[in-house]
Figure 1: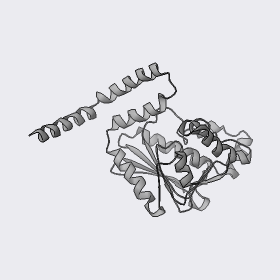
Figure 2 (figure 1 turned 180 degrees about the horizontal axis):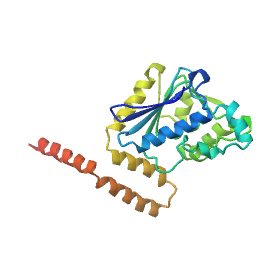
Figure 3 (figure 1 turned 45 degrees about the vertical axis):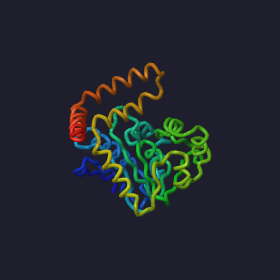
Figure 4 (figure 1 turned 90 degrees about the horizontal axis):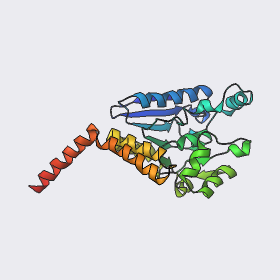
Length: 255
């Protein structure tokens, strides 16, 4: 039990929270395991996309196992920055992540979801950032990411009220791509992952890098950097092959 990791023949790294009897609450060891899974996926040339999910029917992930983590934090036995890898805060991770969210998605689980690029949720899933009600903050990337992903007032509602929200409300806020019946969750998320895995590897990486790094720059600098990133994609072997296929189809159509 902990975090499971497997790579299939389509270039999809399947990463799953695997502690269903505890609602996939993360032990300190599981945080380390999750970080290592993302490192493995990033370093593996065969991996084109990560599909993240939770085992069991009750929860995607409810965040840290507070019985272990809070005493460790309070006693200064470790620093919260040690969780950065699990929350994909590290620079240079440009492989897309698809999250399949079932059941409870709370605290650190919510924060890890915010690091995903595509988010599919079950109609029965429930979301919350309960940290403020417990006297601490959602500092696993949320304080930075949330106000950049949705309007300020909605982000503050999620963080300050610490209330639970249904999947449909999260979708209205713009935090979810799809909300589907529970029985369709895995299939829909896998379809997203398969579709992305078939796209150009360099193009996908450049798109994600641009999305993560250009938004804070002034327009002139952002456009300059965009051109550099775009040139990397245009001059890749994949782009050359894509252009060859396109021209071949055009010639066939013209006949």
